[in-house]
Image (cartoon, rainbow, N blue to C red; front, side, top):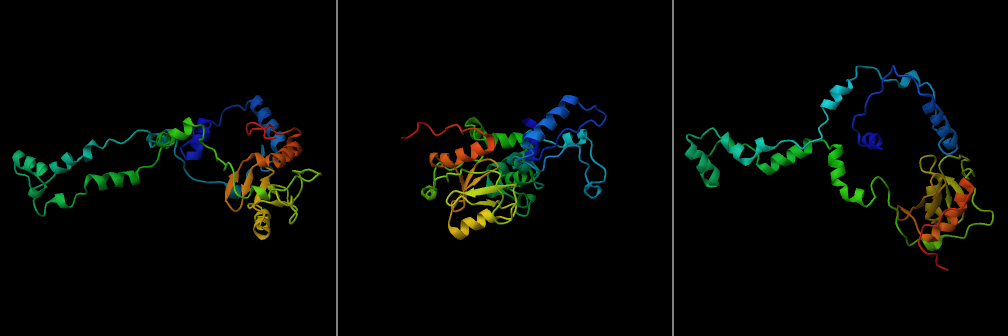
Length: 267
């Protein structure tokens, strides 16, 4: 989990040793995973050679060099405090003059480097812009989301004004293997929850989105993860009114009923 988070945040990952022997149990686990998920993720491959045109050539920094550039600590800004800035004023002739300059802004010599030096606010803002966000910074900023178990997830809307447009599931149910009505593709298909026509997602030919706009059928259910998207609200929605459709798709996909997770059932 930690390495996955580091990869998503762009932090350097440890390099794999090229002389290590392949673990047979790891190979079996990978093959078993692919066999289970290839039905839903056609891009999963194992032991497939990459085309030479996609290979990257050049010198790469060793792991030690990359890790030395990674800073997980706050920089020491003690050298850029206002007192330190005052000490570099060239027109100071004595410690007494330095004290007067520090305590009284009106006694600042005209034409001194004091006029050219940025103040503490501009200095800190510039350093904050130049500083790259680290994993520690990111997790600190999202501590509340971590505590509430909302980190690394998309929280759907509990309801939306378009749920009354949901039609009852047809007697034939929902077939998650049905192709797109327009282009006959199967990956990333969605079913309209108003007319229950199946169309492909926006990363294929976006027929589902075009259908929702042209017919004003806003809600569609994904066959990939059984999430429901509202094209008008532009957000995911999860409400007990969606259970019938999600349950039908879940039965078609996994062969069993979807667990009720919306609190007490309302009869």
